[in-house]
Amino acid sequence: MHISTKCSVAIHCLIFIYEYGEKRKVTSDLLSLSTGTNSVTIRTIISGLKKDGIISVRPGTGGATLDCPLSEVTLYRVCKAIEPDFASKLIGVHPLPSPLCPVGKNIYDVLGCSYQKIGKDLCESLKSITLENILFDYHRILQKPN
Amino acid sequence: MHISTKCSVAIHCLIFIYEYGEKRKVTSDLLSLSTGTNSVTIRTIISGLKKDGIISVRPGTGGATLDCPLSEVTLYRVCKAIEPDFASKLIGVHPLPSPLCPVGKNIYDVLGCSYQKIGKDLCESLKSITLENILFDYHRILQKPN
DNA sequence: ACCTCCTGTAATTTTTAAATTTACATCATT
DNA sequence: AATGATGTAAATTTAAAAATTACAGGAGGT
Image (cartoon, rainbow over all chains, first blue to last red; front, side):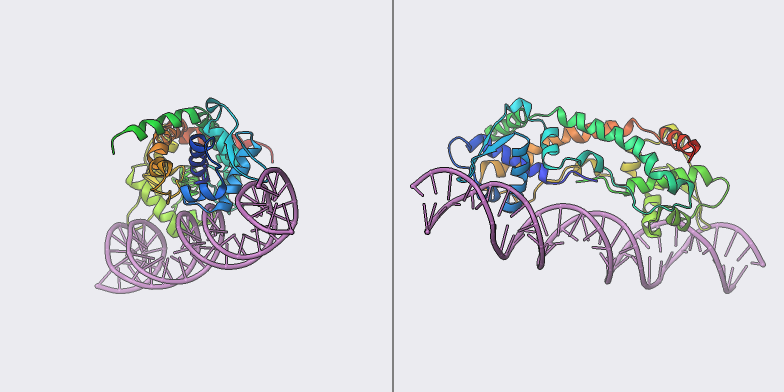
């Protein structure tokens, strides 16, 4: 049905970790401040990224660092890490079509044919953008006056 | 942020109108029953499709009919008709990043670069599927035993 | 001309999903 | 042991989507 803002928060965190992860300890509280998102949400996102091997989090004492080449971190991988079945709920389907109507009885399967393709195409599109690309944009925007 | 279930309801309505629009008067109440969606929502969807020239609705007495070759009705056109700026809100962005943080201050613009491309790709994908394709799937599924 | 059935919208309420808050167990370092 | 983190679970709050209610038209039948 939708890709949540979690994806945006995740990328925000990854940029932050890349930029500051070596110099200082990047905790969920710090990311919470930078993103304006509460720290529990940050931790679930971070937890997903960690499980996927994109970042690692120092146990006990805390702090996150990138654990993967920038060019291998695609938007697809980020979305998948934080919401494994995001692609299948891109477009919502009305839940109560009439089983007495030939259209209503079959609409779910019919839409499935097309929506699967749309989902696959979206995944390809998300795979085409990497954290490397995004950091390039970030630095370009940073250097712009004002 | 997401493509709503309205898109699915719209396609359901279009299939229904194609199948029964000539034989009987397809009203919003009938579509409401078939889709399991209330008739006001149906009417706003129908209204969008009408404005786009996909269907026409007999004024006063009611009833909708297809007004466009099946091959020209793409999913893109349907989505656009019922939600003109659907592509720009595909992926949500967290609304309150810190303006004091270099990342927070620029994240909106940075994400914009990538999200615009994703949005464009999605539109292309949606353009590749027509009502003709969907009706083909529908009839194929109808003919399957059980 | 009037009644009926339908559309088109506006305004409100309900429902549902997402995000926040609260709470606490656990894990390293000091 | 004490501190400052993470990792989750459960409950509350918030915000978005859909349903409901209400009503002003339009066209055709009688």
